[in-house]
Amino acid sequence: MQSLSRGIRLLAISAVLITLFATTFTVSAALDGVILGYSLNAAGCYVDITAQVEDAGFYAINMWDDGNFRAGDGANVPAGGTITVRFGIGGLILQGAAGIGVYLEDLVGPSATTTYDADGSAQLWDDTVGQACADAGTPWTGTVVSVAGAGQACPFPLPVGSVVYNVPAGALAYFAADASTYTGFNLPPGTWYISEFGEEFAKVWIACSARPIWIPVENVVR
Image 1: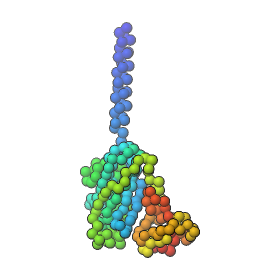
Image 2 (image 1 turned 135 degrees about the vertical axis):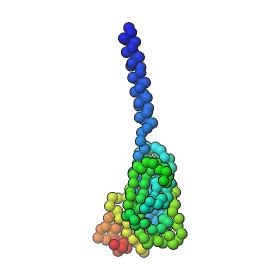
Image 3 (image 1 turned 45 degrees about the horizontal axis):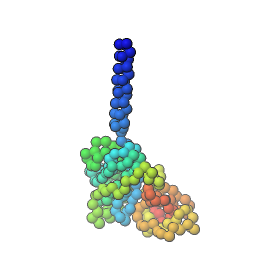
Image 4 (image 1 turned 90 degrees about the vertical axis):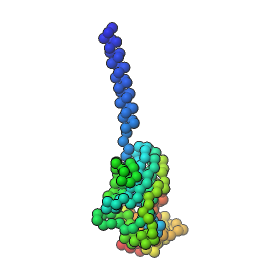
């Protein structure tokens, strides 16, 4: 009887330990995420950076250049959701190290202790854009412009291998690589991500929430 009693007590203790372990495991689930892409508006002197997260929590996107913190902002993001931070372009990208650093982290600025994803050499704008924005007096800023739920995750992520090209005079915009599919609007002058070149048209990435368009290749400086 004593042995049975001891067995029941051990089972009860084991059940409690399993429950505690499961609770601890759930509570300590690690936050994580990935940078999805960039959307440059050269004329507006800003670039939007979008990241998607795994677990719900506070996330920040920070920008650094050669050891100088430029700007950042963050917000609470639902599990599987996305966050977009708009960065004001305050000047040239320094060339002590190639590109500018973009980091998805747990806090805004130098106080961040955990990095979930990073692009340490992002070439987000060229010197022409940087100088024009500096001359216009644009400050380095970072502002959350969008937080979306999992069902609203980036439908049009930046294609791998996309390169920034100059479209100095703007261009007619088409829904497809076909002159009969004119959209009714023109792509503004500036620098744009282009993911594909054909004989007559180039495919332009606009933003996470916007379907890509096509423009005539002769409008692109290569």
